[in-house]
Image (cartoon, rainbow, N blue to C red; front, side, top):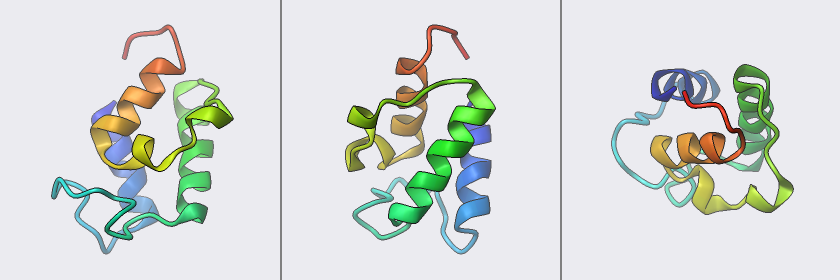
Length: 78
């Protein structure tokens, strides 16, 4: 799952290195439009439904947090 999420992020913002370990939101790697696009791709790719309550900056701060969000949004293990 991590590789797929990383590929999605690179497609959204190819100029940034999403493996750096920085907070994607705080460092400006992702803006609100990117997050909306990413949510749509995550829902489609992993067949999940991400709750509006989960759309907070903390859940999009790193690849690991994005993957955790996807895992919480489904009962299927990836």
